[in-house]
Image 1: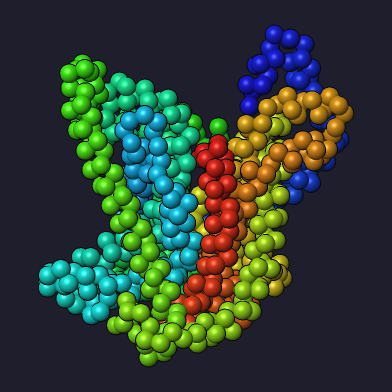
Image 2 (image 1 turned 45 degrees about the horizontal axis):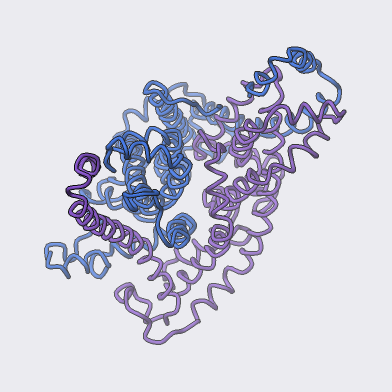
Length: 331
Length: 297
């Protein structure tokens, strides 16, 4: 933001005027800010920040949600939560999702993006490939259709008796998979659910990474090639470091999505799956509030979920900065 | 492997030129085949479910059984489409009324907020910015319960009015962030020049900033349009089948006890068409804008 000021440095007088003008709060400026920044900010405080503060307060009551009777119980709800085995299972499942889902999605979409952009001819100009528009539409498709629909289609694919997956597997001779309930067996339910979400997002992130890779000057790749770097090496030591901020963005978004995962998980296994193997925190929160009418307890779950989400985002930014990332969100 | 090829090229240029050329061509062919094989595999994986969606939507009631999901319809029928259309049509209208204004308003507010945050230093700017980021990262479920109370206490009617308000408010953080980063790349001289010419802050925004904001607006509008169109969570809390958007109507169509597969698949396609069109028409600009320093976060 300051680079422009630096450029006019030689004519020092200009800088000085700029500085002086900045400090002066004119009526014009103040009224503009009040209307266009202040007003949205107030609305934002009322509708986003204050509900969160309220949720924190409710989490310390044993409010049922249907009357105004809110006995204060302090941290009782939190103690109850950490002694609740099923809630802890849902925390574990959410953590599994937030660890694996972004990694799998991002690695896959990076591999595909690399293939599309620099996997072309290894000679001369580095090329993309034909039909990029077609691939773009195909890649956006899963991102565009509503999550509810994605869940319904995949539930069909996984149908034990006549779903596509078992059809293919028995078709190629793996008879052991005849009638295998992918979503009904605790060993595979989580993996099967993750596949659905990966399917929904790989294309989208592939497109984003392609755009990012195309933003890298062709000379950079050319130089690496002349220095004798192979494709794998180029991807690892040129592409990834140069688009690390995009990867970080993708990681945070995917992580937030993984910590929610409500729609996918509820459509695929509405009650949390076999032995609660696909029960996630947001589902548990929903049933606690609306089926068991323990709103206080549900709010406590919401607070735990928020803490985990914020902690996760902070961790990603921290790791990126420690490992030498150049930018944080603001820059 | 290609390290070797490059070295060969430098060292043994004349002697083995022909041979290495042939080798390289061969390798290129294998690489290309491998690449396209992988991409085609990816396309198949993506399109198979789309194929099921499409063909099932044209099946009759008996034909549209999961056991026959992968076969073409015995007879192509449009009953599913007709039923889906009559069921979804009212909610589609409501969704348009909801999504278009909410995308426009939050984009416009985001643009002004982003401009102020990027170009005007004022006390507390960092606090404002942190609050906005916080809004992006909190899980919506955590605030849903107090929020339902707040909205009903304020007397905002259930359904589209509530959702319009909430989509605008909850869209503000991402819109502001995108515009803030976009305007950070606008040279300060541009704004200085306008000010020297005597333009006030509003005038500067209107005549200098707004006209160069098109790439930012494309990104934000598409983003807001898609997320509001596909939103299910807010819709589930703040509306019902009678007054809700298309995702809610679709979940009733697809989630009942006796699922009409043809109708629900047709409904799914109908519900996806608007966003798909937006992406096909504007996808190129969206991706470009998203990467040109807008969402670096």
